[in-house]
Length: 163
Ligand code: COA
Image (cartoon, rainbow, N blue to C red; front, side, top):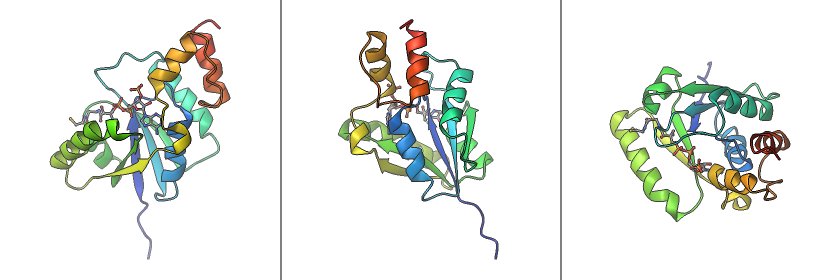
């Protein structure tokens, strides 16, 4: 019997992608046949990198992996998940401080669409203190962020900040 592919959507702003995000995607691939990294619009954020730049930075990370798809979406994430025949939303949890927001988001998404589950992965210990904003802040003032992002993201950040 042909088993249907299990597809997960990993949504986020990815401004830019960090080693913490890469860790979550890599581990998700152990549970799902395909992972769609969906750059979603968060109206509360003003990204440093354009949509095209963020797509390019993620593509470079997973160029060799045909089980990773990169896409963009606006509107309700659960509608997007259903449209892609995916069964789950993957989110990373870094600390207790993430929990309130993520619980609220997951409950709202479940209320909107019962067929979609949210799967939480604990962020790898090495990346627990990382966020895209904190990395951008450090990079802006010339801090050493090597080891927190891939080399091509580091280069892109240096170029943005003229360093
Ligand atoms: N490693 C490193 N950083 C991580 C991380 C990890 N494992 N997990 C989370 N983060 C950081 C991100 O870098 C990001 O940092 P930043 O705030 O400094 O940019 C932060 O945690 C969380 O952001 P992100 O995961 O990108 O989510 P978001 O809050 O920007 O966006 C959406 C959440 C886009 C998924 C959500 O707004 C959404 O679904 N929007 C569509 C509309 C919708 O359906 N809303 C819900 C129902 S109303």
